[in-house]
Every structure is written in C-alpha cells, then in structure tokens.
Length: 290
Image (cartoon, rainbow, N blue to C red):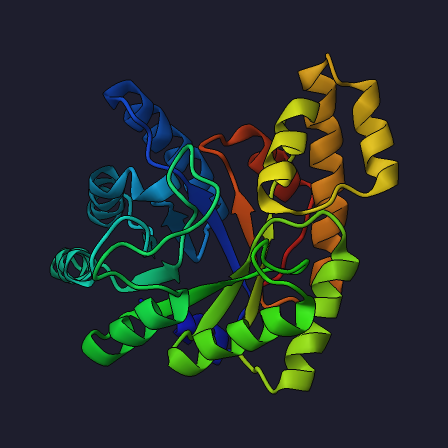
C-alpha cells in the first residue's frame, strides 16, 4: 500500500516512528512495542536512518521485518549523509526487492561530532536531489520533510519554503513535519505553503515529552522552540521524569485535538520505541480517520 493513496482517498492518517536499536535485545523490545501499538491500527510506521546514516543496515533489516512479520505498512527513511549516489541507489533497490513501497527522502543530519552537512563525494547535496533520483527510477510512495519553524540551515522562512517547493516538484507526494510544540507554527507553515502553491498533504510530527532534559536536548538539536508557559511547567519537573512524561501526554493530546479539528492531513507520533505515552494519548482521543 502506498501512503499517497491514503490522502487521495480523503482519509486522514495515523502513523508512528521508530528508530533502529543497536542491540538484539533492543530490537526485540522494539517489536514488542510495535505489537502493542498495532492495536491502534496505524496506516503506516516509519523507521529512521540514524544520525549520519549510521544505522543503514539495521534500518533496512527492521523495515523488512516489519513488512514480513507484522502486517503493518513500513516507510523507510533514506538520507544523503555519508553515501554516494550509487550507495543510496543500492539501498533503494534492496528496499524494492523486499517489497517496501514507501520511503522518506531526507538530506539527513551531519555525522556525530560534525556541525555542518557536507555531501559525500559523488553523493546527493539536497533532499530534493535524492527525491528526484527516487522518483525517476522507482515506483515508491515518497515523503519529504518540512519544518514549521524553518530548517536550521535556512536563513529565513522564505528561503525555507523555496527549498520545500523544490522537494515537491522533484517528486515528494506528501510531507511530514519535524517536531513542533506550538501549533501556530504548523498553521503558519500551511499558510506559507498555500501562498507558494505547494499542495502536498502535510502530516504533523508530534513528539510526546518524556522528561525535561530530553525535550530541551531534542529542541536544541532541531531548532524547535519550547513555548514559554510549557517550559515553565517543565522546569517544575526537571528531576521528576514521570511527572514530566504525564505533562507531555496531556500536552500532546491537546496539540493533536487542535490539529485534528483544523483539518490536519495526518498525525505522525515520534514514539522513541516506546508504547506507553503513545497509547495514553490515543486512548484519550477519538480520531475518526474517514
């Protein structure tokens, strides 16, 4: 099943994101979480590529196993980092041969210890280049990333939307946002897209907060901001991860309710390979997807 067909049917999507663990025990724990979350009937799940493309082999293996064993539709992240065009092409061929039908084409983050993205010799420079290559040579459903507050490397929001339009023109069928904690930023992104004539469906990426240090660390990496009122609440629980997690569940639930009421194309929950927060959020919501 290709993900773009969900949006063509007029249905709104629900999906979860996982990352590839480094150990066999971690992989088995992940599949236990997947088994629990399967009860919520996600339209698809995605698996990340790891920082700097560091988990490429594990990612392909996990995506293939999801496809073969769980009955869920997986989407594999594919990045430009530390790979030549031929190496990326080889990964796409392997995914195609394994029956994977959807990929998320990303530039990717610099390898650990580096602050600036530098294309590999003979590699893709931009996500739009990777997406164009994929569109020209394969039949995947293709997703792309978008950034409600702008990409860290974009000098301004106007430049950011120019790059986003290039991804869609290159062949991205739909878009998934980076994490954001203020829905106003998401609504403003949609307005900028409309003015630029970008018509691709936009799925909201939501990260349930697990602890105060965790969300502060994640937002420092991504450039997303923590709203002042939320940060003040989080400060109360800087040494109480359970209370911060409960606050995160409540906050994400309110976020999704507002997004759903305002016609979001879908919600993509960054599960961090855990089921508790995602389950609690979805148990509190009635997300009719017709």
